[in-house]
Image (cartoon, rainbow, N blue to C red):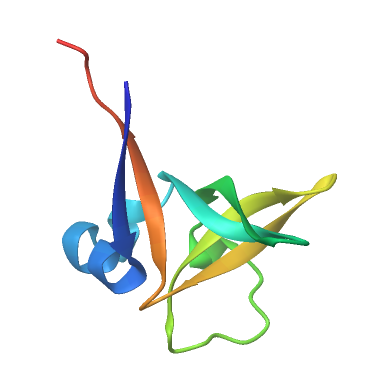
Length: 91
């Protein structure tokens, strides 16, 4: 079963550390539609392995999300909510 935990970027880093979040699946509001934000599943990226134009001090973590035929980095800010996914056993 997949479980989701809603956290802010700051809470996630405090609970799991930035390094501990790398590779974890998350749901972020990275897509935009006519009626608002669209949730997308992505993976927390290692910022050392990415090309980041300008680092924002309010960014807690970066998430790779699919964008058309490519991937893009989405910034999760310190006070922004997202869902951290994890698998738990049914037993």
